[in-house]
Length: 403
Image (tube, rainbow, N blue to C red):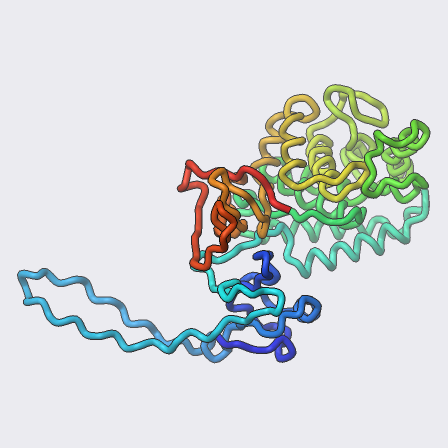
């Protein structure tokens, strides 16, 4: 491990210590591989130095001697303990001007882990591909739209490359109302749910394809829907907005490369079991459509598409509240097992009054992550590492998310 200036960082360098701001927001976690945009962000935040892994240490680490088993005191008289060779003092941590706390970048004994569904570079490539395809689409002139099928197949392949993919708990970040990013997010979560529920490969593929084009109709609206609760709009605008599934279905209904299941998902992804949905208000909603519907409802809430934006844990509670009413309970259960209630890096307050940062998730327990306590109940900074695994510390619960 060595200390370098941000100006000396290069693509491919590996961050050796978590880089935190004064409020303990994670800028770059330990193990992050440096890319050019990350360097620009560090400059923007006035962070001048960081720790990176030393390439020589990575390529030539000396083999550590194996400890000998303890000997019985009867077999040999106790010997005077030999003093261990003194270790070189650890280099000072990088300190950004915005952070007066010297411990802010201290290395964690438990690695911080952000578990995302798609690798960052894959997500960016796929989002741009979706955007290129859908923006070139002209109503009822669908040449080129078939390329979305290849994109869906690539997403499935990338997901299936992960070990124990349906046993993990994934972090979903709050973000802006970008319909292309929204389509990708719905696709990836819906694909995971389909796999978790044991659907056939063909069914999962249909879900993936339909998810990528389910909001195609939004491109034909003049009604503003970003960061807007459509139920508060004038009746005429509400009616127009609720036609977007019909616009999308009309655009793709004659496409022979799309299955009838995929077309049905596009038309009915806003329908509910209790007939409270739209555009038709029926209750004949297939399980595949419900899977996409759950993911669409959740992601619309956190990115503000047709809804007032909320935090991730609030969106999850909304889905939970409608289990068995809008969607089959086993579909909601599969969704709840996959998505982290408190994503990586969230600032949370415990029932004991401590302020903590979510470090990593516990598989099968999305509501009980591992946190690092950074302030005690009196608001005093804690400069020694204090880790709480909420699976082990059963009396500690997260009481609120701190903005």
